[in-house]
Length: 143
Image 1 (spheres, rainbow, N blue to C red):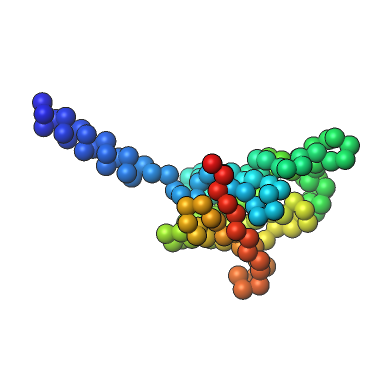
Image 2: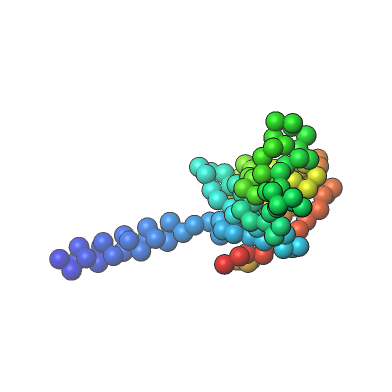
């Protein structure tokens, strides 16, 4: 009985170690404090949804819309709740590439890569063409 209990306990501990969530998953705030994004994993890809805005309403008190989007059919959707990070692949221990980032302020979509600097800092780089031609922001984890 003791051997069975020890084996079961070892199995549970091993399973919990391998079931650890990826450290990029969670809630992050941009440097200006205007928005917060929740990063999740679906299948083997990572996505981020803009779940909170400092100022979610326009001057008329209505939720802000994605009016800068070049696709007329998408201009009526609200900005809060938009999926702005899409299709990232984990390519290294702390590196996620191959994804896109959408900027609702400009209506533009950029190639992007994410680099986890430590448990509480995430570098988000958006670029056109090659990564050298872009801009990086450091997001902070929200508890």
